[in-house]
Figure 1: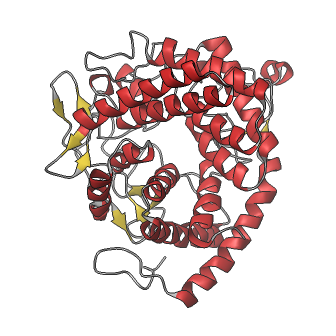
Figure 2: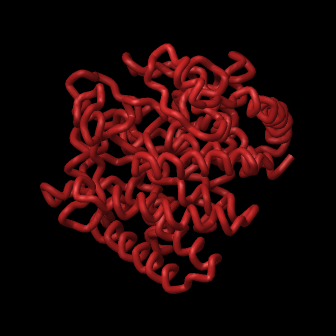
Figure 3: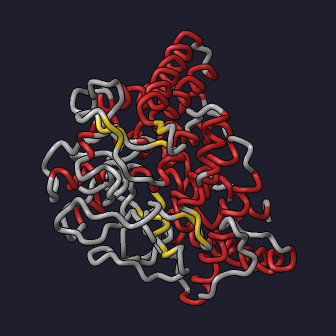
Length: 423
């Protein structure tokens, strides 16, 4: 794929009207196709499905779900954080009932296992993923408020927050959460714990996430506390709403204090054992903006430094390649030159939250050029892309990019609306 025309000196995309009109029309074709994929991507995990599972690892779920991998053979599970991004696209397409099914499935997981699992397989029983259920539920309830469902959200999201994310194995001396796998995983414990952040695998935690207070995890917990404050306020429980609002402010303040690098103008992972920040620059620096942690000055500095990660076709996970801290991997998944759909989605929301509409639109357009073009050539959406040269060629020996609907569909749907508005 050739580099798009109109790249400015600062790496951003100059928006050429005629070119955008053509891209908008091509995106609309993809968006219409994705609308037809949702029912095809639905899986079930009924008792009969569990009994018939050839691997014998499927966990039951009460409601049908849009799988992380769509109708493709890869990833038929309902993954934890993938589902939130899928929900954003489903809501954009008016698929409110399916989002409710997702929320109820994850509530059922918390009731049974104490947490939203990484995925609905037995080998995920020992860990979760970034806590995004409360945020998904808030967005659903904003579109269609159901007091009964709101009460379930208020109860079970609070339960997960307090008994899993604030349990001893996740607490740290500095007051923020870490990530840990509780054991029983098929992976080495450091890698399994890193997988709970959703970022399997990355250099940004220095090799052992259990020493860190991950930006993604704690930013999601800030949003979760805010969502719980909102839900309780809708239910008329002002005292509980104020309690969760105080928790939101407490955690946000600690992120700002411990993770902000004043000299570099970005947020970094904090190693609470060493009492220092991990010297790896990552696009996760935008998670605190997504969570509303930053004041306007710091947000502006982070946005001004987006050039570290910005390339013709999107944002890379890290600003450059870093030595792998995991000896079994020479090249990691969540690092330069890879760009991942959920990170583009998160950054787009973060930018718009702070009023950076032009920057959000430019980044959406650059991603759509890549995603739409790759779909037109291959007939597929992909899990991740090389956003530097616009290809699928990535130096990841164990986990090459695979055909994927899920959050790849979500990125096309949501970022298309960021770029062009609703069709």
